[in-house]
Amino acid sequence: MFCTKCGAQLQDDAKYCTACGARVAHPNAACAQADEMKRNSGF
Image (cartoon, rainbow, N blue to C red; front, side, top):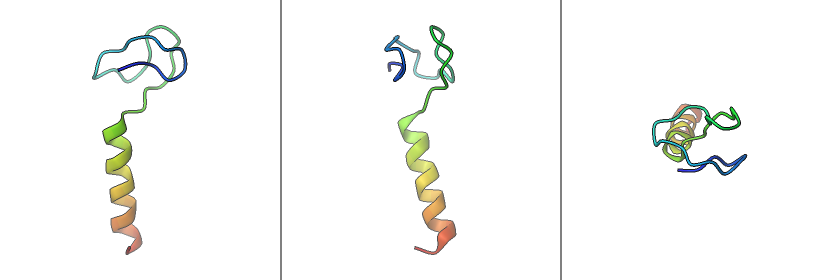
């Protein structure tokens, strides 16, 4: 996995980039959040 801000290689469980400090967005977490929003909105 790589930082989307600076391109540094990251560990799979990283929460922040060790090179630039950017918060790491995990693709699976975004999907889970979208699914939760759909369930709560009635769609």
